[in-house]
Image (cartoon, rainbow over all chains, first blue to last red):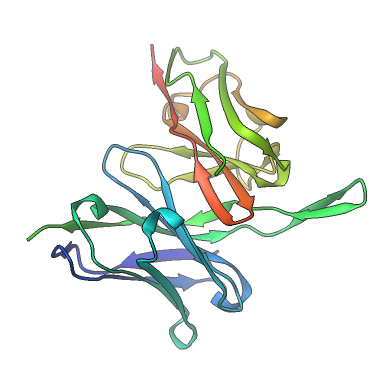
Length: 128
Length: 110
């Protein structure tokens, strides 16, 4: 059974860098894509970015280049760094695994894109 | 960027009733890229439906998804007390790679 656990400082000062780690159990990080998603209290979900099994990364343009996601293979972890944080970055941060599989129809094949396993989330507050 | 709109914002129903939730996209979506999640207060989202209509592992068959193009629907037959929650649709755009979520529909007890 795949499980994810996000961890990191609960309080970060404005203009500093937020650093979070997601520890994966039940599978190897080199087998899947991994995402970070955040949710301000009482609001909706925002995808931050993801990293592929080979280390390729894609980020939400709304973060203006402030996010960096990395794999930490020896520890079966992946991480998120978000620089120059402000109060608007206060949120619950979730790590999640991309679901696999796909289907073929009409001569073309498509991968599925969804998150099938989520960690419990860790709350980060940006405040001085 | 593809924008998702969910309606209604809130659905007030009684246990045993059917819930019909709508998700509309600003552009056509490949069905493999459309998913639905359930989120209860204080919990992480849980995958319900992927590929627009495939139930995730362990999801009861009272949950079903349908739709194509720009219009998608999540139906919950015979609401159980544990189904009262917030429901989000999600899509993935390949170019550039970007997941987006709808604003959510709250299903609460009437």
